[in-house]
Amino acid sequence: MADNPLLITNTDISGALKNLYADFRINAFPILTPLLSQVKKGRPGGPERMRWGGNGVYWDVQLTRPVGMSASDAGFFPPTAAAVEKQANLGIKRTYVRRQIDALSIAGTSDKEAAFIPLARKIINEAMDAAKLGQQQILHGAGDGVLGVTTTNTSDTEKVVTRPYGITSGGPGGLLLDVGQFVAIYRTNLTTLQGTATISAVTNSGDNATITLDGAGIPSNATTDVVVMANTASDTSVSQVPNGLTNILNRGNSYANFESINAATYARWDSVRLTAGTDTPDAGQPSEMDVWTMAAKVAGRSGKDAQLTPDEFLLLSTPGVEKALAESFLGQRRWEADDKVVLKGGFKAVRIMGIPLVRDYWCPAGTLYLVHLPSLTWVDRQDWIKLQYEDSGPWRFLAGRDAYEVNFGSYWNFGCLMRSSHCIVTGYTDSVRYSHEV
Image 1 (cartoon, one colour):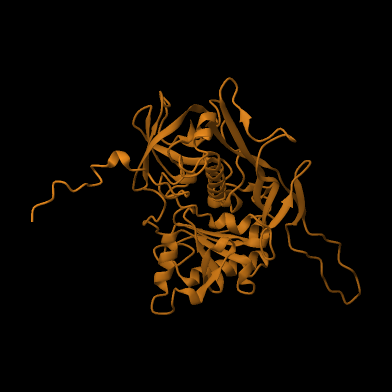
Image 2: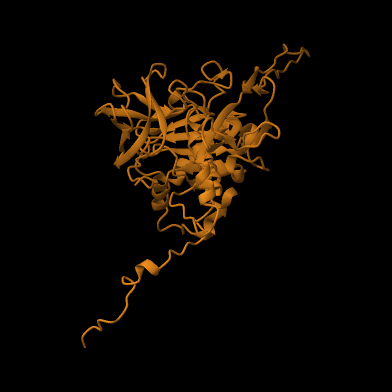
């Protein structure tokens, strides 16, 4: 039967149809912050939370073994002795998120029929997501603000970047880079500023990320230059961000001096550092015995024993290393709910030797951490809030424009009370990436 030429279709009446808007907005980017969720809030068996003020936070650290016991048939006392003690201290860092909005856009999006959600609410939600993700990546860094290292200077506007956090073989180069970031490029010494620009495009290929910069780009940069976040043409985040596990755990023995105590002078003020394949049997196959080695070495150095108090510790690694550990258990146990524990923030962890293991997509590749949560410390003066003075209000007019801006700020830092109660293994084969890169 032939089609009826009088039949009216949607195409014929398209001018009479309306768009139906639902009042929700889907965020396609994964807001996953497992490490941040475990360390941000003080809790029993969790990180200490200290309030910053004055000249900073100070505490006492005993760095040598208590000695002085002796024996004497004649009844003589031994000479007096005292363990070496030093003061550790931790200052504060300031982190910010800024958003601007045109006044007409606020008015034009206040009704459900005109927009999915009110624009002001969208901006606040997005700013808080940016704050959480920014803190999560900081917690894995070294306090220097490094996002990556250039390997190829294709042109002033196009650079190839790898080594997130500045760590060799640390994972995909675009892990910390995305469109819209205002960045600076420094020479390797993090002293000579080459220039600033906004990233307008990112293309990921393996562990290389090709970034395109807007405007004239940044001229005269060389390979091994360093990419960091920037605020203005002259003010950047170099060494202005809080500490992360890279310098807290003295990765590569490159951060001996931490919290005003030097591990080169006081060996007890150092984390346990192991190399996969050297201190473990096989760099290509992490196993439960690697975790046993980590726990035993930490207990011997610090007295904090993960086998006695496993819930005070946390194993943290990439999805690739977690998968390799799971493969070592095949045929021995189930990698399922029976072995899992729910951590703060709703993250589920599998127990290895009773210690919770959680995968973290921001973790440097090939790395396995064993951290003692009560020995970590979160220092803050102000959690994320809209910045304002007294009753001035957080939304401010932009000078000379019918527009507003709102600024969010947090004053905080991350550190540890006792460096020797943590362990890091580096160098596992971890070539498969399960990151947010596309």
